[in-house]
Amino acid sequence: MSDKRARVVFLVRVPAPRTEQFLAAYEEVRHLVAGGVPGHLVDQVCRSSTDPEQWLITSEWASLADFEEWERSPEHRDLVRPMRECFTDARSLRFHIQAQTPALP
Image (tube, rainbow, N blue to C red; front, side, top):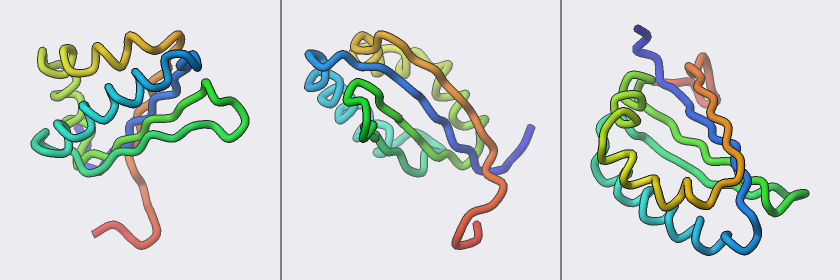
C-alpha cells in the first residue's frame, strides 16, 4: 500500500434542473469532510465551460487508504446520498500524486 498523497476525481452529469440541489448537497458534504475526515486535504467542484451539465469533483488525500476508509464507512454513504441522487452518470478515478509545483513536502 502506498503512502503517497492521492487525488480522487469524479466526473458526473447533473441535469440542469437539479443543479441547485446538487450544489447544496455538495456544500453539506464538503464542510463535514473538511471538518474532520482523517487524511482529507482539499476538494473542489468544477463546472464544464462547454457543457453546463458536466461536473468535476476532485479531492486530495494524505493517502489513497484514507479515502478508501472514508468511502467504505456508513457515514460516507449516508452523507453523499443526496448528492449522488442528482447524478445521471458518474465515473470515479483514483491517482497517486507523483509530483507537483511547488514540490510536495
